[in-house]
Length: 587
Image (cartoon, rainbow, N blue to C red; front, side):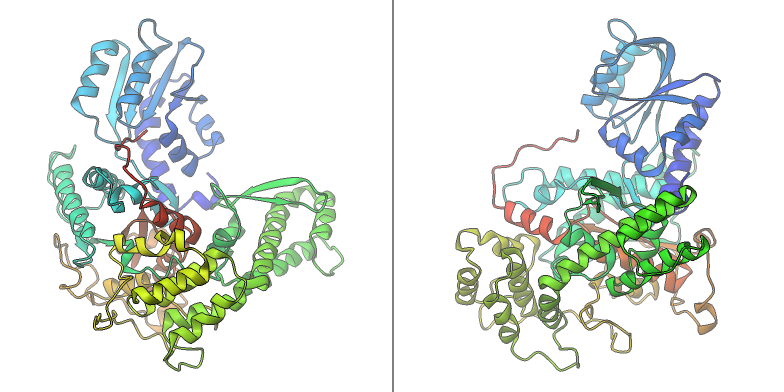
């Protein structure tokens, strides 16, 4: 396994796959074919490489849905989701004539009886093993998971959706498989908000399904609650974080650069098109992704100079063309240097955007989000902060983001004000970008007499921050309060209690602060799992690592249906008006 995948969720998922699928198949010492559907292909790619599979005597990986040549002398492993489409494709491989000698079948989750009976009817004589292994989530990073379901946003929040309940049921099933993979039976809590009822619905579903799962456990013994908590919140609980321009490296890159499927495409100095995968196999990415861009820009050349010095290269200004020369001369350092070339290029791309317009936007955005300026003086007239943004030639999306931050800062605005904004931004025909936030339970239009209490925030006035990065995502307050047992039970009711996990011991003494504790040592502590309905941001993902690092005794894991960027969220918000919706299916 690559070093970056050697810890956290990815390592746990790969170990579970090895202990079930691989261990079963190793009993017969022959090479096998592995057949995957689109979801299990993503799942396997996220936690292992082809070389890992070859080590386990898997010689070919095939797509379940594509036509394949029969190999009647080989055994086939089927790893698939329990859907009728997958089961039909499986049956087609053995009826009327078998493509393979025998089949080892593994489902990601519980297989409904009708599908199971169908398989038995047509293929019983070929099936050697049929198991459910309870992994129907994607380990995105060491402490981040997704349900690989961006469409859940529209199905939950569109007023035209017919599938909200079924979507929440599916998310609940996926959350149960996450808990089972982590061997946790957590206490479940949710954010209580009458405008955001989905959190309570999902909490009830998860708690009931967890109880059923652990009653039916293979061991025959009912599993008691473990010292873990699962908190469920909705995207509307913090509308600010997904809209702000973030200046930490990962969040900034995904906001400003068109990175699709974690792949960064760029043009090298010789004009050729190149691409790089931004994942945990790239250790430089792991080191830099949560750093402020100012620190990342400073660190990358230093790291290159270290390599340069170790090979006695003449030290000079680091440029991409210099690096290309160094790479040719030092084959053994090619991979290491290639990573640094990529990040030099990516950081430069981020800074171009920053210098062009983001820097000027950030001050206004931070003042509106935080409610005070750099010196701590309260912003008395948010309109004066917003107007320069509207009068400058920024992009439509940037102006929409600023208008939204203004509205969020006041917990809503008047119809009259909103119409003026729409004219300024020239989106009179696309008002859904702003109005549809109400579907998430966020106040957009309010009457002058309307008063809404803004939630109190943790005091961070003593923390050192960059002037253009003063905002802290609300989820970080929640994480820290949960770890210190300070969550208000009226705001965060217990769907089910769990043993006292943290009992106020979240604070770290000065003696502990510098002690490095490995991820595995932390396993003796407790886990806090937070699930955000409606998408999670890169800045919120970063908070999970920051709190875990500060607390030591607790590992924070965060997840959602999908990871969002400001642009993707705005487009999803706008699309909520479209309808009617198609019925819900999972491929």
